[in-house]
Length: 598
Image (cartoon, rainbow, N blue to C red; front, side, top):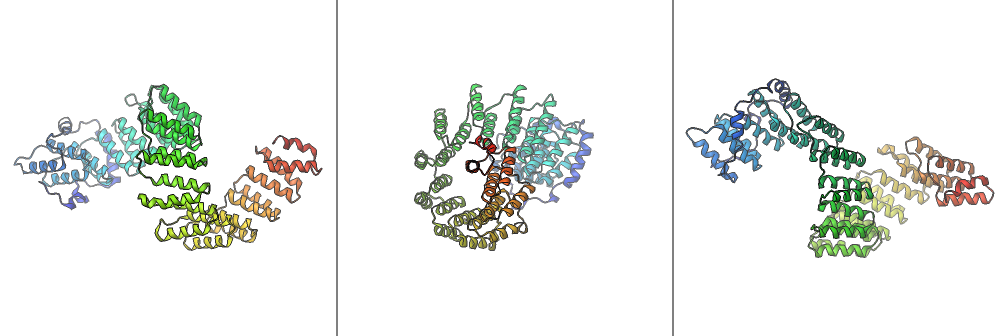
């Protein structure tokens, strides 16, 4: 048997004939393919076709290596066709590095190669993510007078895309078409998938239209579905539906994958009616939904709190022969947790375990968070402590939920201790975990501890974001410490941060509460100038502040401005204005403006 040295699996450039840099090989490819595409490749009709036959004796890699060794021992070496058969067989086993090593052995023994040999090696280098070597072999391919065919160039496109080199893949496609090599449906679908994976949906759509222009290579259901899926992922559901209509009008029949993608897209935008319409249309076309289709609908209904409907969907799903899995059960648990129905959520959890689903950290996390949200902290803690006995290690999400739960019930010391435990033996707490504790301390009036924690976060050089600053600024404002709040607000630019709409609203609220209406008005103006237009909440806040500071003309001006922008006064603001009108402090003609808000 041929012995493969460990070093032979890894290659150096000297082992490959026809060495070119990727850029020079692409240039050679551009200049040669156009002039060569009309020539017949040497041996194409014989070796290339024969090379695709499998040797029935070879079933394992050892068989192949033994065969290669025996072939080398023959006094008269077999033709390259036999070697091609062997390399193709090993490539089908996905032992790409072995193919390259045997190719090098062929070169050492001066065994001639042909276009099929080189195409196989190019494909293997592409699978090994060695695109430089692939292009080097392509250089030899072209210098030998061979013309790359669709299969070879599609391998290169796949290789480029596998490494995220989308521009190079597109360039390969362009040279392919300019040189007279006709892409097939595999080529197009490969490139479409590559464009969509990097989020370049517009390029994918353009390529799809280019396909429509070719008589012999129209887009199939895979091509359309790939682009539809990308549009849905980018929340462009209207465009996805338009493309779907275009697809069906051209006689391409959608399948369960296409419909499930569209249903998922509609669910992402909370378009329940559209999702159900698509589901019913699919069933009406006798396209059978699969487990993924049902799971998507169960998740959507659960997130909308329609858990009874979601559970009914699981019954239909199981009647169709699909078993509920941990994903389905988790969606149902989340639905019940959103409704605060923790006993029902626990029943689903127990049912999941009874039906043989493995213990899942996500399932525990959902229940723990659900209990924390309704302040049943003891049950949350019990589940948390149970996890290690089930072979599960709590992750940062689980810890963060429990820390938030302790803060909700005022047990900030327990939350502190949990953070310390994480630092000692658990997952390292991140900025979100610290922010949860920071918020809990502020909400529980422990401002001194909150400031101390914030300073600790700075010393640890955590990437403190605007969310954490908003929490502390809000806490300082609530405590009436406007000097410290304004100081922290003014530091934001030096920290590389810009206030967002929440920062402005928190500061404006604090200034109004502190009787500093002029500063609040100035900050409100600054907010608008910085690209954060007032919303309903900000307007109502400013109006009530103006009234409380006896600036009624400013309050009326803001109310008119708010209405002009399509926002409405809330109940508190309306009641305040009606009281002012009733007491004669405002013109009665304003009553109609506010009564319509009731």
